[in-house]
Image (cartoon, rainbow, N blue to C red; front, side, top):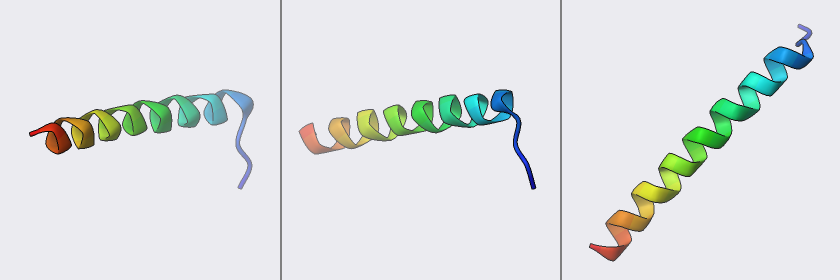
Length: 32
C-alpha cells in the first residue's frame, strides 16, 4: 500500500482539522 504525496497531504489536513475540532469541543466542555 503506497500513498502519493497528495493523499498524505489530504490525510494530514483532515487529521489536523479533526484535532482542532476536538480541542475546541473539549475546551467548551471544560469551561462549562
